[in-house]
Length: 449
Picture 1 (tube, rainbow, N blue to C red):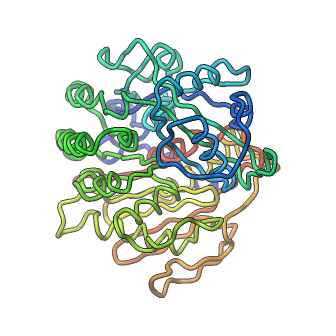
Picture 2 (cartoon, rainbow, N blue to C red):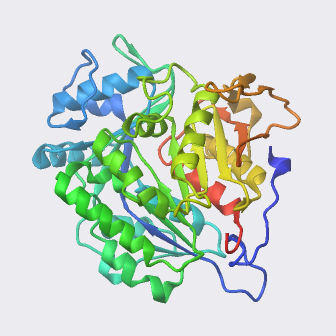
């Protein structure tokens, strides 16, 4: 896959990435930030005096017992999840234990901050981060990430990232895959407190790309607040100059009404691009009565045909077309074993390199290596698959010499690539954000499309 990658030198008005000499450096604007405290989930729960019982999903966590049940539920599936912890005092007690844990590591957190941090690793890119930035987060940010004074606050928002390895055991519990369970009591991001700062800084910063995330954090807010804030988000996006791509990164959610509102109340039509994983894709379809919505959960590696059907439905029902006022024309789907980049024809280019770049960074970042180490990765993608389960899709057999597969369906192009999955990942959190950032970095949006 590495041989297929060629970094494009493109003008800001044609897309964004590395600018040709003499041109203005592209700017990226991100919204949503926190500090991630990353540690072993099993060791933390043991330190809290908890034992594994029967796993049970909770849409919201109210106690230590809820935390234990939800963690067991998702560790048993090897699935990623994120939940809001409603009890402030209990959360702060757990966060203190976690933060002081000998093996705990502190990282930049929040989807947009992570994507911004990934962009900032390219010296040619300047990133403006609008989010609640406390002293610890400010210290962790790359020098190329600029924070407006209004975003600075005295206390950091902490998210606890409980990781587990493939095959890790806790009494009778055994994880089939390496993954993580995230929880927080984050009210600043949940209230989208930096929305107004974001809007006011648009004119001065002149972004070439806007990355928006954190809508899932509103699950801890009232329905009336959610409705009002979503409308304000759409208004804010409408203030972004025409031609500037807006990427929305989704995250784990449990509130179907909120997800349905994000889909239907003009948020999807207002953005240009989406990034999401298999949990978020299926939940989206369930919430908005999409295809395969009767499927309760994925059984192992998500079926490519089912994924393709849902991606096609999103772009056909809510994407850009001559008869619909929508800007949505790109979806980057990522799961452990493979990625798919779906785009409405005529609006994007360089998709092959973009999806391959996302897959490559998944393997290198998880293993903490500069390049793919073939001894440390494995192939979990299906060797053959059908491109649709709802109609007569074509049968695809993977060719190792041409790992990116392309197919088309009624004006939508699909680019599929397997992922070389790290066998013993060093860190799983932030992988989706790194994948989305890398895919965006190689993408070219057609001007005036």
